[in-house]
Amino acid sequence: REEEERLRNKIRADHEKALEEAKEKLKKSRDEIQAEIQTEKNKVVQELKKKDSKPLPPVPLPNLIGINSGEPSDPDIREKRNKIKEMMKHAWDNYRQYGWGHNELKPIARKGHSTNIFGNSQMGATIVDALDTLYIMGLHDEFREGQEWIDKNLDFSVNSEVSVFEVNIRFIGGLLAAYYLSGQEVFKIKAVQLAGKLLPAFNTPTGIPWAMVNLKSGVGRNWGWASAGSSILAEFGTLHMEFVHLSYLTGDPVYYNKVMHIRKLLQKMDRPNGLYPNYLNPRTGRWGQHHTSVGGLGDSFYEYLLKAWLMSDKMDTEARKMYDDAIEAIEKHLIRKSNGGLTFIGEWKNGHLERKMGHLTCFAGGMFALGADGSRDDKAGHYLQLGAEIAHTCHESYDRTTLKLGPEAFKFDGGVEAVAVRQNEKYYILRPEVIETYWYMWRFTHDPKYRQWGWEATQAIDKYCRVSSGFSGVKDVYSSSPTYDDVQQSFFLAETLKYLYLLFSNDDLLPLDNWVFNTEAHPLPVLHLANTTLSGNPAYR
Ligand code: DMJ
Image 1 (tube, rainbow, N blue to C red):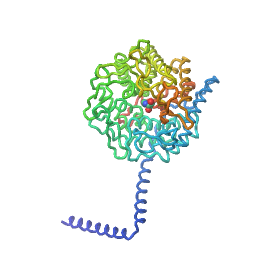
Image 2 (cartoon, protein in one colour):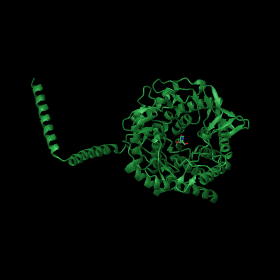
Image 3 (cartoon, rainbow, N blue to C red):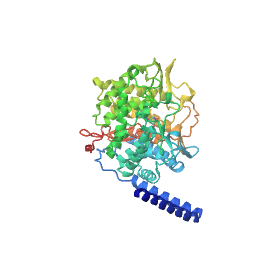
Image 4 (tube, rainbow, N blue to C red):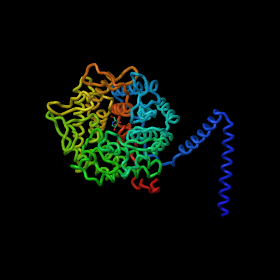
């Protein structure tokens, strides 16, 4: 009884106090009230910022070698390398002038550009994607400008629906690489804040994440075009490298557990012909359409199996086994030789092989070479050879065009070899995959033809894609007077120019024994975790 009475009195007193306060407030002008609200809001934001920027626990940094060397002694190679650096300056300076803070640049309209993968806010995708390229090229003033923008402006508490995959590979990958290269804490802190915003995407009945998530509300959903509400293999299967690093750097197993859960689930599933379909429904845990691709929708899933093994200092043998199994099935069902003797990787569609290869698929040449060492039954020679054959085919796809730049997709059918047939497959949007493969092949063989092919591509890009305010994609590589798409993709600075620069650098710049490149060409160091675990045991640090 007494307690009830006490409570009632308290409620009455609170109520009266609130009424008094409201009366006081109403005496104030509208402007005064608005100013008060703003002050309160600022206080909350400041508090949140303080909480967000708490220093993370220190962890021993892995062995970071070869981050700023690589100067070739041959004057001809040095000159080529300098030319590529000049192209990077041209791309960056124009983005700086006309697109600063926007995600990408429209080099002809001279304004910012964005697509739905980045949501509706200006997240400076080009800045984050370009940082590590600037760093290894020794463009330190530009790097500092980028760092300053990120420190002051990169904010993830925005009501914006982004692609989980793209944000992971470009932003988290870019920030982590910038952190490892420069040691600047701000990059690590931002990467961890952003990763926290992606975690709600994993709240599905199976733990397979949604393709998109709203950074503010945490609500996720899938692309409308994906088979029966499915998530995409190359999207949910391309989180592993970055998430392992996040757990390593924070001591928080949550990231590692999310990606290991995906792996375990995939391991348990039946695979038609041993192939992984591109679509998986996150509600039911069942495959969607039985399409398999080493290009778009599948590609980097295979890449990350191999790289998970490499990044773990070859301790993650489960990943290596999954890679070996997958590649064997791919070789059996998808890889063929054309009548003209070109090795190509086709696409599997409901039991039928489509004899078409995408520009995206060309990355696989480099992957086969990278995975040669340590392959099952000691087939290193075979996989290096396969890498060389894919590199050759992809070079042919460039060489058979008017501009000497590769089309988006090319066929091996009805007398056509390595040539695009459909008009909407004839474009080149500054993609890196062919050059990426040249670079890996160069590192493993030092065959001068890879530098020669890389130089052909550099010259073609400079001639046909360079405009006065940046670089643009072209709509038809078979036309002698191509039109521009007016987009300078962020991956041009992150990947295409980085791989070209590395191709004309010595091997001691980012040596492959110490660094593993994520699928957006952001280098992450090999982690030596031999006696440790990332799955919840704090002892590992
Ligand atoms: C990049 O964002 C990445 O390389 C991704 O894995 C595939 N596509 C683009 C470049 O073409």
